[in-house]
Length: 230
Image (cartoon, rainbow, N blue to C red; front, side, top):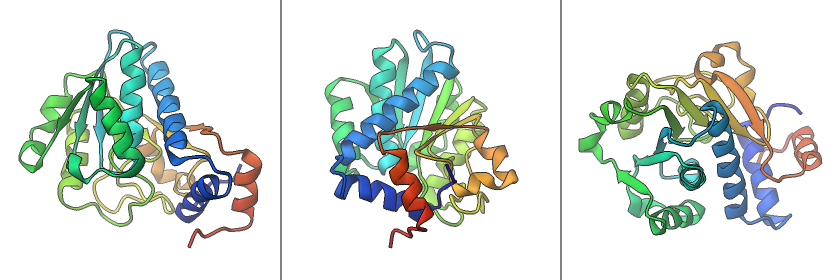
């Protein structure tokens, strides 16, 4: 299957939701569960392991909340570091945040004042999950999200990125500013176009593609038609 651009990825998601009738929250559940599977494999079994999930305010953060639930059920000690205000969450991400809260999972909101100490918090974990930002990011990161990425890298822990390392451009595979350096990137549906750029490998590490329930013939047809998602 060919690699997907940012716009193709968005268009395929929208087609699955609006035309096929697959609720977005189902796609998020599939993505988060399969990313949790990948982390479990990465750790050679999650039971008794310490997992930090750095979550942003968008759908990648929502995937992170799903991951926290599944890894916790498998015996991992999971802490979610939410680097976006909880009251800004919406849609499917907010649904999964509430589920995680209702289950009593450890979610710590990291405001601007706490960001500078995030690397120290992360340094005691067996793995750090980057669920901060996704394929929609363009250009150099700024503000709190840039600091969060720098802190993830400064923790010197093994990192698993959800869909794409935060700060790496989906289409070019170039990081114009800070970007997460992952050992493993678990990407949904298909590889992203930027991953074909050799320089992206220093940020993605190994790339693993997972199927979140969108038929491959749909993906291939829409990608082949050059869907722009506009």
